[in-house]
Amino acid sequence: MMPALMLVFSCAALGQFFLSYCRSLLLSYAQIELSSTTREVLGMQPSEIQGGDFWRILGLVRLAPNPGDDKWDLRAIRIYYASVRAAAFIAFPIGPVVRKWAEKQSNLCAYFAAAVLERRIATVTAS
Image 1 (cartoon, rainbow, N blue to C red):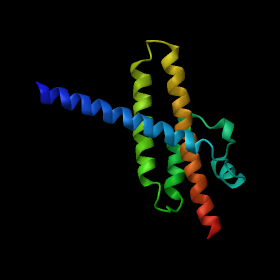
Image 2 (image 1 turned 60 degrees about the vertical axis):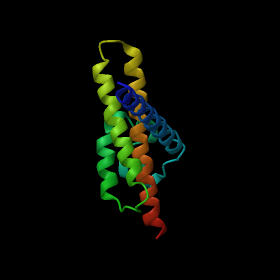
Image 3 (image 1 turned 90 degrees about the vertical axis):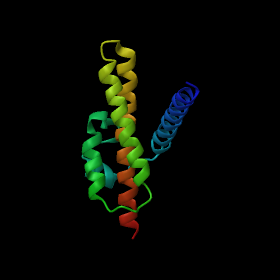
Image 4 (image 1 turned 135 degrees about the vertical axis):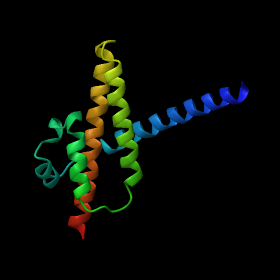
């Protein structure tokens, strides 16, 4: 019984650490300003980026040359985005509070993908 309890506690702690890590990534990348080149590639202004654009922007990120330092961050945010969307789907009947939180987190994930695209474009133009 004790090993099972320790396993559950460890998994919960790992999950909490993962959520904190992802949220700190999202907040740090939210500070990056998008250049006119990136806005042109995206075809939208930063204020127009919505959570539904995440996979499209991620597709553009895959087309850009990879500097090699953001692979794990992208993977973590993809998992976080999928988790947020799943939580929103499951909690949809509960009320608007969860929907609003999930929408905000999805928007941050999409902006994260745009900021990664910005970094990759800046790497290409700097070369």
